[in-house]
Length: 119
Image 1 (cartoon, rainbow, N blue to C red):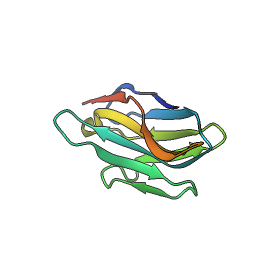
Image 2 (cartoon, helix red, strand yellow):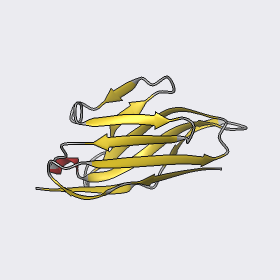
Image 3 (cartoon, helix red, strand yellow):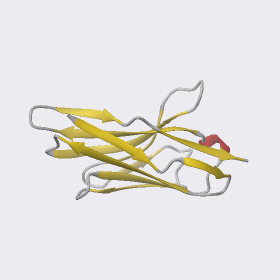
Image 4 (cartoon, rainbow, N blue to C red):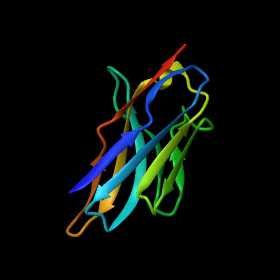
């Protein structure tokens, strides 16, 4: 069993910053890619940023230059530093972690953390 827990969401004014954190725990032999997704009301879930085990990153065009994804392999965590936030960034942010365990390899989702940006 693997648990994925997000934290750091909240309410912030436009132009402000938030830092999201996600920690994976449980039956983990190794962690592969980790990413952040978001879903606004009435919209599809979209990829925000992803980071591979080797540290390569990829960002959605809408957040490029404002968000930074990073990981701490010793703590099995992935972070998302969000700067210059805009109202359109308002969404539930979900962490996704690729895990190699004792018997299988699969992805796990966190429960999500709300980010609200006011104008």
